[in-house]
Length: 196
Length: 51
Image (cartoon, rainbow over all chains, first blue to last red; front, side):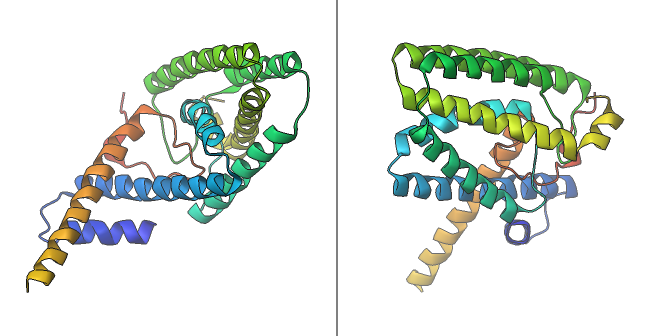
């Protein structure tokens, strides 16, 4: 993806009119778009094969905002990221179908996970340095998002939707695991910045 | 010639789309801690908050 984005930027800027900073921002944006686009496409194909597109969209509606503001583990290469994304999506979708536990118990587990994520996140990483101001802003946004997730979980329990409640629980569990992995992987970096 | 011209125009259109989406993604990346996928390219210095 990095090579492809570099080539696209070279082609766009054949006349050499862009400054270095503009080129770096554009390359970052194009590379990110290609990676996110590929992930979305592969995820949609998998969901189509599993015949679970609405459940998958619900999963992403919960997962994306929480993950964006909580941070956590990132793979060193895009290929590993893609494999991990596909496997985790497959596991969440399959487990949400197979778990048959009392809804109130799942809700209690969701609440416990939300409190844990509230306490340990955000987990910063080396690829995205943040200032103290950004850290405070993202913490506030994450807490508001978790409150909305908790309300959504309450509604899915009230509607007696086992599948949606299970998806929320496994989604938060996945985020919790990535946060722990991020805490371990970026421990030294977090210690250095004072955000551990 | 017309076919080649159309092809080039189409390709140029694709590049413009890449430009717009790339710029939007780069700007939106400032609004979150990280991307939801498990890989993030190196954040450019120009986008860092230097507060």
